[in-house]
Image 1: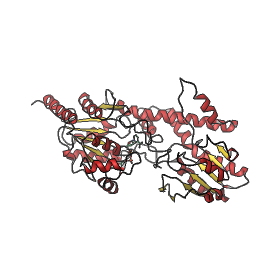
Image 2: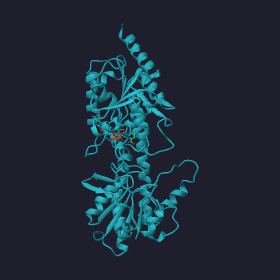
Image 3: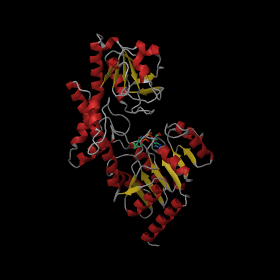
Image 4: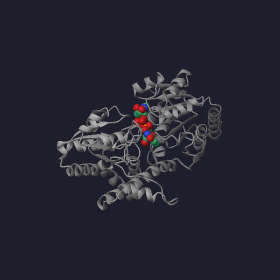
Length: 444
Ligand SMILES: NC(=O)c1ccc[n+]([C@@H]2O[C@H](COP(=O)([O-])OP(=O)(O)OC[C@H]3O[C@@H](n4cnc5c(N)ncnc54)[C@H](O)[C@@H]3O)[C@@H](O)[C@H]2O)c1
């Protein structure tokens, strides 16, 4: 059999396995991206193996428990009972898998350069166990070129040829944790393969679970789609943050200005200022593109400017807190501040890169005693801090010199907070609907 024919046999076999749901799917990294993906696929009847290096997470899945807010424990437990999901901590089953989806972290190094250690190490493990007829697809966000320049050469050490004996694609994850309107199913998915055969196989896989799949002509473009999306957000958030800094000087209410601006039915879309950006996407992904652009002797000015403005926001919150306390005749170093919400995003438990934690660190460095309450984060260890959430009692509110709303969780009773707090600095406009106690509330 010549290689072209062999390639099309592998492709057609894999596509039929996907279509009749007998394909066995491996998901590497069962986190915010990997676990929902694994669950969606298992719900369709595919057998899914989760490869998760964290033994606690793997064990929880095998006991039918979810540790991600958006994924319901009842569903995981049902799928585990039916034998559709199983988690392992190593790569022993690679050869059994028909499609392997990589969902591991892609963080930055301290110098804001891409840290691909997780992607590289899992790819090396996959390469060791590969067999002909598999699809490998990277979902982790990364710079354009990763799939072709980093992953492909490692997989080729298996001796197998891409587009003929195995298929390789990138499909960026667009999950928006906590978003009730847009789930995996109704969020369009972008897919770009190393070549047309890979694109076709990956497109077929995603068509099983997503309403609409959009293909790009190569993996690099698909990679760029995702980093551009997050750059778009980072730049627009920086723009409204800068407007907020100007409004602070002009003594104007930025929220009122923005709300009025967003009544225009075309040519504008809502973005809001805040205490800084957090999570594992907006503060990180644009720098992947910035780094890659430098390789081509090209400076991405918008990205560096947006990063600079957004990173400065916790410092501004610190400054505004100090100003407010000063107006009350208090020195920061002699006050107790209650930070309300440490998750980086409303109604979420994820506190990675959260600006709230940086603000706590800064205020502590200024000598303040800082406590926090977050209904979704009972405790955290980050930036050298180890703290536990305090119950949001009237006594706590009254005993603190300032309540700093850093995350606008919707389960918090802000009326109650404003009633008992000495003063509230609201960095999210969480108190927008409050009529009473406005004199005690300062907006960012
Ligand atoms: N969280 C989001 O909202 C989101 C949205 C879109 C894209 N992304 C991207 O998706 C990727 C994954 O992000 P996430 O938020 O799911 O990360 P996460 O930290 O929640 O999950 C990653 C998982 O991978 C596991 N892991 C790490 N190394 C491993 C290894 N060698 N073998 C097996 N498992 C390993 C970790 O233990 C963890 O459970 C990142 O590139 C991120 O930028 C995230």
